Image 1 (spheres, rainbow, N blue to C red):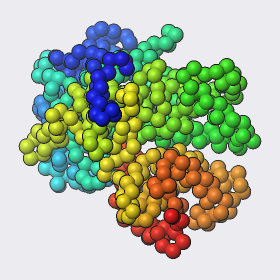
Image 2 (cartoon, rainbow, N blue to C red):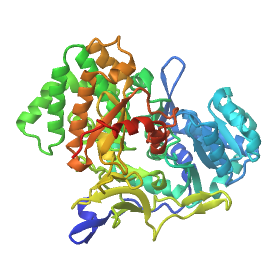
Image 3 (cartoon, rainbow, N blue to C red):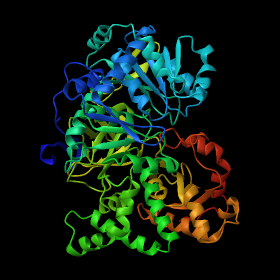
Length: 619
């Protein structure tokens, strides 16, 4: 692929790179046709598996899914929903989510995802701004939240609840609607028709609705499936499959769900990334690939390390981790490196793969950088990690690690059909058929373009190397400028520290300050393990945040992170917090990004302490 890239160099540096599309543009039809095409071409192909009440996974064929989609679409039409109407969907990651999504498209509607954890204000704002006329909620709690806002939502005519039998209700309502009505609705849709309004998570203000077309999804998934052929193709006679557990309200999970239907890859749904339920679902479903965010991969690693330490094999695990990283960072490992990896495979790496279900060969990781250490570790443990970079505005990935040519520490090369440009101020700009139609304008009832000559300014900072690989260095709006005038990108330091077993979240501060500092929250599981191993269960959390031994461990992690940057950019002081950054507390978005203003507001005292007398050492 690298030989096909087109480069633009300015003053000897790569400022722009683009990759040709691997597939032609879809000229007819829409995503609504996918279930019907699958049912016509291969009706007995297994495209989903659903977990029943006994915990067993039951297969759903392409023919069955198309029938489900068709009957629910007729129900939506029977209730008076017209082409172009917006249907909101508020649920966890379930089969019903994907079913209603495709049924809405088959009825000619536009879907509007709502995070199941949304507050009343967030839900009301999105329902109002999108002009949704109907909403499907998962449970009674979500329905009550929406119902409490109905007075301010005069356009919301319908509210269905999945747990109360919404799918069956819609089926019954649509029983008398002619099949031809759905066919006619699908026939009205073109690739350029609006498919969905996905609202940004709103780190700095009210969420904005990103208008994504059917063509945006086709360009994204068709090129991604072709590029990542090993992921989506059968291997050794084993059909590909994945367990979706990230929110389908987020464009990353949604894109993969659509891509799997497009490629007829078997999909299961798991409602949460938390707790032991996900591990049980992975073991039962046994996927061949996963999409994940760094948080999930960090937890898998940390649990494995904690388990080894509890059994007195912590040192052996660390040796195995170093061996995996040596193997993972080398394109042609030496005989000794291969031998070390073979030694630890049955002892350590096989258990890592077992935690992911036992058959996972590939992980597509996005949302934020996984980090060099964990990328190398998992690659050495037998799980190839494809990192990517993208935004809601670009229908998920715009760059991705190419198969057989990974470059650790980068987010890969442009997705086929994509252009990447570095502006004069270091901002990353993107172009391609997957770039959205624009932000939704509620007053006009349409999308307003937000590109400059086809280029979308992302707000992220980055750089291209000589071969076209992109590295993201931070957010333009998050860039800190110390009182000495030093520009500091907090992301590399935060990503490094967040990968530590004892660290849950980290926020680097230092804007208009003499030096850089950090607020750090402790990981619940990691801290519980550390306390047990050091017999400090009797200490309260506030005492632990002042415990010299714990402070020394975190200081070592800070020292390691500081090696990534210059002295002027290094963290000189930190505070361990007794509270967590979470979505419920208002400090994280639903996609686990920091709401920096909220953190600075709520922990202003702790920040001031780091800059008071004795707060930090700086030169």
